[in-house]
Length: 417
Image (tube, rainbow, N blue to C red; front, side):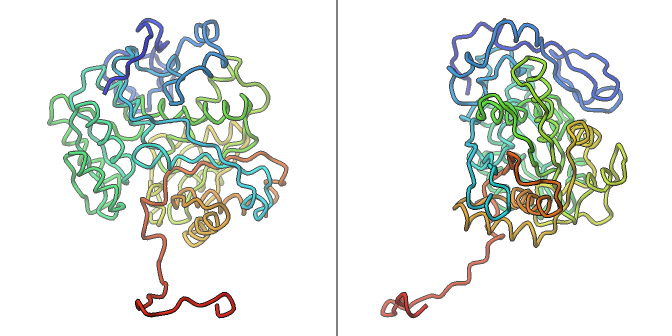
């Protein structure tokens, strides 16, 4: 559904061109694009001088509380082509009890579980689908570990477009149902996300009007997700935190936040040191951590990738070199936690603060504790954890083993428990 906004199409977006993330070559932003000729992700570039001259943080503060408030720095040229379900401007929550327990009093959480479809993937879908529709794409196609497929199916339906989704058979059942209810053409694959990606790529080659919107194989998913970075800085009074932790699978989120920080520095909207970016993975699938520890610029897929945090089960990310660049450029780090640790952290946060987060978010809270114990965090920092989805999508991560009472039974009194 198109948004109704009183903006001239000539100034709604300052999108200039697309740039190859490997060789810096320039490409046309006004035709449907995949990866660059070098096989690398394409990054959207904007006329930042024009933005700096015509827009200020004070101007942005007067706009609607959604991600489209940063529209000059997003790729949709015509405001009538914006496809929205109200995504963006999620809360940045203080976590006093969790912070005290972990030894990090300045702990906050950016809670992406409150966006449409229940996960941060809605940001990338909103912008990616809007731009695809604007460029004349008839249907989007992608592999997914669950949440991204649910988001792109929903936004494609909102735009009146078709969608083709393939996901591993072990992906969360609720995301499967989200795809079905949105009317997508859904297939389950007896394998991992890479296997699903091969099947999708083959289908797209044989279908006219379909675009492969796999992670970083189109340029605009990253643009929606970078608004998390803009929001964090705006919510902190146009200041950056000291550290941002992000659960990392395909890596788009951490790449996107890094891109947002770089843009804001160039615009003059952000001064001072960059926040240290931390890529968090699970020990059962930690190619970024392994590459970081080994000083490598790219990762190698593990032989047997597995973790209960299904959203970060990505053995080999197309943008792995960009994730590693973001971490190293900001003086950050990469860390892996076990499934047991991340589930314990998920449960502990709910008891501390009353918020049920996804297991991927739980991985980040487990990482906070480990980084504090190791001294990498000294406890004085302002730390933001990205919770990338609601725990409601992962009901099986919480076992319910409680008494059942007969109607004539008795609940124990306080001195009997």
